[in-house]
Length: 106
Figure 1 (cartoon, rainbow, N blue to C red):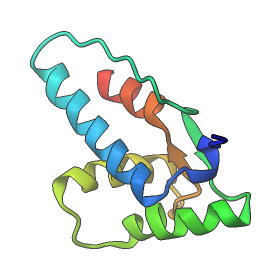
Figure 2: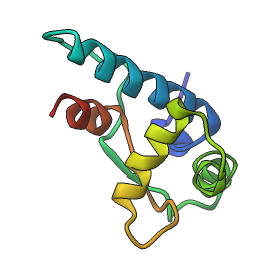
Figure 3: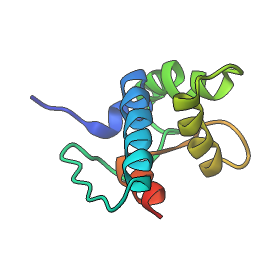
């Protein structure tokens, strides 16, 4: 199977995975020491402004996330991380698991 992780960055499945990973790491780290092995990690940061097809996946995922005014806390935490990477607004830059985990662990 030929799966290009960067092609799907920011799509709806990525949002669910990353919101859950972020929550799990924060929750477990608060309870004590934590070691994280992410066997399916891609890059730490994605620039979503390139490939037109990739942009369509990101539009249906992270772009919608960033414009939703009523997010549940789990998704709001991810939206906050995306917003921190895009101080001028929008969702050009999207964090991958390595960056989310590193930030959550401090």
